[in-house]
Image 1 (cartoon, one colour):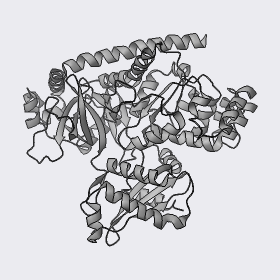
Image 2 (cartoon, helix red, strand yellow):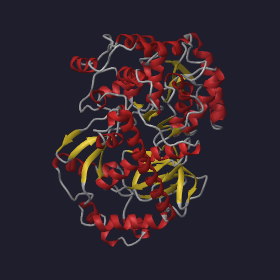
Image 3 (cartoon, helix red, strand yellow):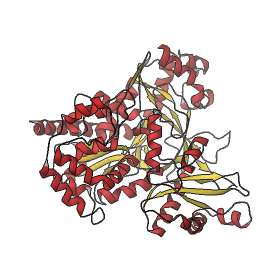
Image 4 (cartoon, helix red, strand yellow):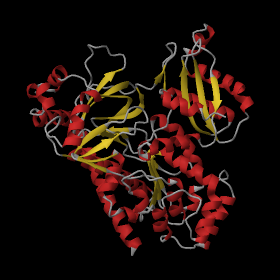
Length: 563
């Protein structure tokens, strides 16, 4: 009965997914006009708000008016309004639209932010983050001559929400699952007690999610928010597979795994001895993880996955292929920030995302712009060029400098196709070389290939306290290197940095920049850092890789974990 219901659910999800793709097709056919309509409606609807009165929304009759009258903004311009909305329940401050939810950033790249989410923006998020990936799956299965089969998968997401006077607070990625809470158990292997929790859950989440997924041989997809979480989870599996097989064989929740007693009691009732499944898994794990990808071997029905893997995450997408295989199609979710969902892929395995013309108004500022440069709109951007994105969302942020740099890669009718490049505030610069995170990813990838060594994670520290300043690469490797090799590794990293940025070698030769340094990190450092963030209230769905060490807290943590 459960399988029949899952098939019905899959077909219904397929219908909704195709509807979203059709909707995006229609909006993109008239994206330029749609953008103007979205903006002018926002001005009309919100002219009586405190922010609207302050910035003369009533005088905005065109895009040009908007750019001349309304100033650029950042989060500090809204923080007081947002706090009043969230904690006091005040209305009409920055938007007149109905707001029942607030989204929260992780704080992993800076101070945590609380952002209002209007009901329409929430609906768009629901449609394009949940249904649109299924629409891509429908297209994929159709190409190979099949309908989408019943779907039940491993989801790494953790879903929590807390209540304030003005509404509930959660991360943006939690919202689709919160809205579908009664149905989640049908398409997800993780028990509700683990997935849905309002407070910090002090437990080994990798174990809990894998324990229930591994016992189910019918897993048909794997899903995550940031693929770093999934890659870390499979690395955990590689080092602990014997424990999982023993626990599945005995039908137990391992007594050495940390979790609250009441949760252990509930979960213990959900497992029973399964020697047959344990032996199936044990036979595959014994063959090793390098003869072929492990995921298709332990879940023979697993045919696709989803998770964010663009920009600085692309290095992790490459590492994940070791576990899932080169041929497994991936939906890369899209270009999403706490403030809005802005673009989605319309095919599997695509890093090109179609901008959603109905979900905000977008301006594109050339990177060489001065204070007099007028931002561009959809009709003006050029393929191949990079721009700083300026966002006006549907929830009260206007001409908001989101600090992201995107690249226009093409067009889907009138909607630009973009890929995320890097955060503007994540550029490392000691002596004018200005190396962004995307460039560092390529440099580190080349370094890894040259050593023929898998990197679990890396972070860059621009050390300006030495004379001259120099770059320190902190890296956790799969295999343990002798600490005495750090000098040799430092020389190789310096060579790769010089190849990756033409400014570096002349600066080193002139004495303006020092030789690079490599420090090896202890095993499990990046998992330990994610755990620290989680204990401090960050949602694992939101935690991004720490590429740039730019705070004392990050510096103290990572340098205390060197070998």
